[in-house]
Amino acid sequence: MSVTQRKVPAHVPDSLRDELWSPGFEDNPYPTYSRLRDDAPVHRVPAPLGMDIWLVTRYEDVRQAFNDPRLSRDLRKVPEIMRALKLDDIRGAISGLNMLATDPPDHTRLRGPVAKAFTRRRVELLRPRVQEITDELLDRIPGGEEVDFIGDFAFLLPVTVICELLGVPVEHRDDFRAWSTEVTAPTLTEEGAQRARAGSARLHDYFRDLVGERRPAVDLSIPPGSQPDLVSALIAASCQEERLSLDELVGTLTLLLVAGHETTVNLIGNGLLAFIRHPGQLALLRRRPELMPNAVEEILRYDAPVERSTPRYALEDVEIGGLTIPKGSFVFLVIGSTGRDAGQFAEADDFDITREDNQHIAFGHGVHYCLGAPLARMEGEVAFETLLRRFAKIELARPDEPLALRRGAGGLIRGIVSLPVR
Ligand code: HEM
Image 1: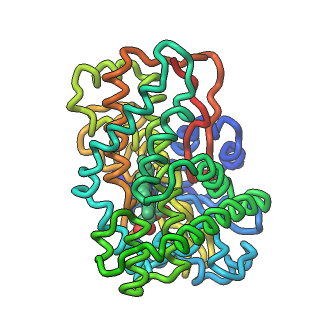
Image 2 (image 1 turned 30 degrees about the vertical axis):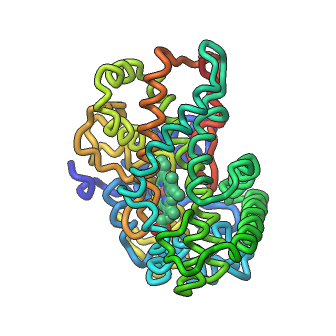
Image 3 (image 1 turned 120 degrees about the vertical axis):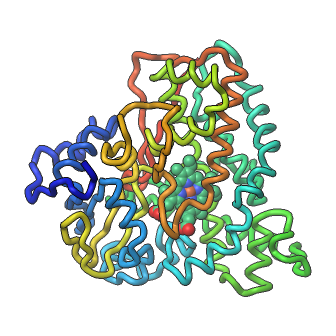
């Protein structure tokens, strides 16, 4: 049955509403998403701060919504939401001013100078360095002893890579981790929103100071694309071509730092957990290493690190899947649900690294399609190739203990806080 032919029931059972916020949902949201796709594919949930949130869960609806210009990313266009969030100025918003917080044409202007650094070709040049960092990190992991796979490896790899790429001191990575954990804290409560704003303000202050310090040393006779690192390239783009203001420069660096590691840590963590729970697939990958790129795509589909899109704001009434979402609503596109949509993927709940034609939307879709997708894929491949080569066996150190899952930004991120393995 095609997705669009499915029925759209008018009434949502109360049990489903309760299920959405239950502890079981935090551990494993997929059965609830399956019910939502069947019974309430466009679903309104009352939220704190007096706003309504709509969840869109079917693959085809989400894909279309990603391309709908009436669903904006720009808070400046929805003063009623700015007021509800108690924001007077967009610079105080969690993500600040950057490509992900704007619509075209601002979006196009802000993405352009950064995009050049993230093409597949440019990213491939980084592979040997990513391999070196991976080896150095794994050298420190003793065989046979319990380690926290997340804190001791999955976090350190992407944060080191993004720091080097940006040209910011890697010694500050513990601060970055603390601040970006705050930034991605669930924001739908007053307290969560305050924490997120505090983390964001710290990152903004950090980058504002860094730009001030670095600006005099940047050689402005060299074009942005030839600068030694991204901070210098963006300073050059800002000074030479006036392509971005200081606030936009700071907002862009903040976005890159947070997006560059809060996500990939969960690709690596969720991936290892999927392999531990599906030893047959791990054995298959050891036998057929050429399946690695496919395996990374399957991890992204099966347990999407970015579980929900960043919110969209309805600039007018928008009909999705036969229901009208009123103007001024918050809309979340539930990426994690789309990966399990049987209307798109055969045997959608199976983890199968030989899956063909895997058109997942774990990196989003449309103009905001993830800028770092080539980098994330490459880091994932290097991480798993190296792990398999260096460790004959990887197992949970405490198999009977429940794992602590991490969700951030109102459910945006889905990952594991710590994964004790041996
Ligand atoms: C955007 C996922 C890694 C930078 C996005 C979006 C998703 C996503 C779903 C779209 C959000 C939306 O439309 O609401 C992921 C996943 C990653 C990952 C699953 C890892 C497995 C990275 C990395 C970087 C990065 C390594 C590098 C810096 C960005 C940027 C945007 C973005 C800058 C905004 C693009 C725009 O607005 O045009 N990512 N991401 N991401 N991602 Fe990633």
